[in-house]
Image (cartoon, rainbow, N blue to C red; front, side):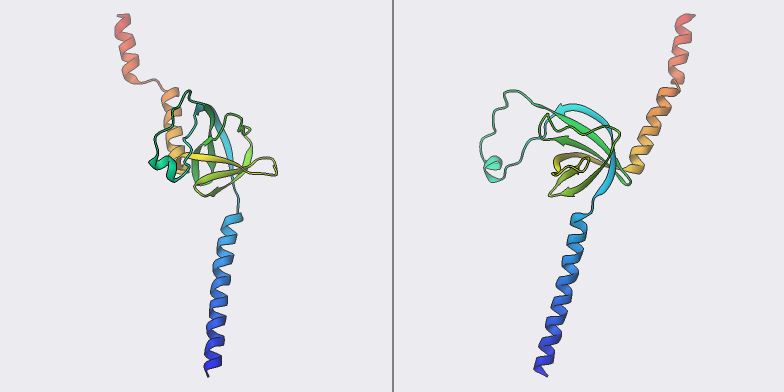
Length: 156
C-alpha cells in the first residue's frame, strides 16, 4: 500500500511539473505580431544596472543621447518603445514579431538571427488608442466653431 501511495504521489508530481513546464515554455516562445506606425528620435531610457546604480551616486550625463522611439500597434495593445542606442532601427509599416521578456520588448525583424531589446515607455489598449486617433482626425478635419466665429468677427 505504501508503494502505491508513493507511485501515485510521484505520478501526480510528474504531471504537475509537466503542466507547469509546458505552460511556461509555450508562453515564452510565442511571438505576437505588430506594425510599426511611427518613429521619432527621443531621449534614451536610463539603463537600470541593479544595486550599485540604485544606491550609488547618480552618473553625470554629459549629453543626452538620442534613441529611436517607435509606436508599435498590435491586435490588443499599442506600445511606445525606445531603443537602447541610436542605431537600433526598425522599418516602418512592416509587420514585426515581438514578445515581452524580462520587462522589455524583444523584437525580431526580418528573420534576424538575434532579437533587438527595447525598453517599454508606454502601453495603452488598442481600443483606447483607436478612439484617440479618431478624435484627432475629426479635430483636424472639422475646424472648431469658436475659431470660425472669431474669424468672422475679425472680418467685420
